[in-house]
Image 1 (spheres, rainbow, N blue to C red):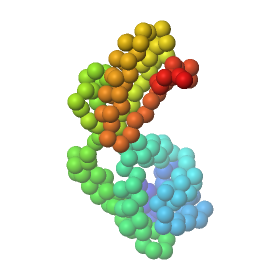
Image 2: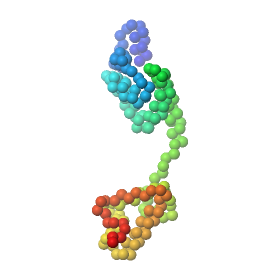
Image 3: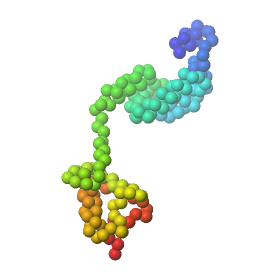
Image 4: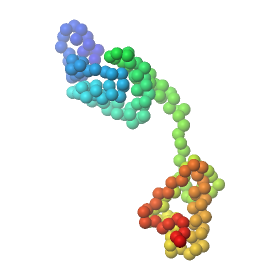
Length: 182
């Protein structure tokens, strides 16, 4: 890019495909509005035709996968000059990514515990998900005797009462009812 700028300043033709693609986008009237996401979509639609730009698009997709887009949008909003351009956008992006790397270890992640209903006894969780498989790990079965059914209902009660806020059941549609049928 620096060579293309120097060639342009000297009145010489630009080499490669990236610089002419950027110049063509500029000549086509690339208008930025100060909304980073919308401006990115506009620029991406106009900037086609070089391997370097395609690589840039891939890198931006990776940033989206790494959840860095909010920090980038905020940094670019701060870099908007209020009229037509993002002042020193490259430096703003670098700072946002560096700050995101520094604060990443500070972010709390929610722990997930996987265990049987038997092992959950005496523990407490914000939420509990109870899964009944279609072919095994039945919660209740109509062929069981009443003692086994009652024992499993008590075990199910243990699992349900482990939750502080929410319980989710994942069961097949044709599963045996969890409450006695009248």
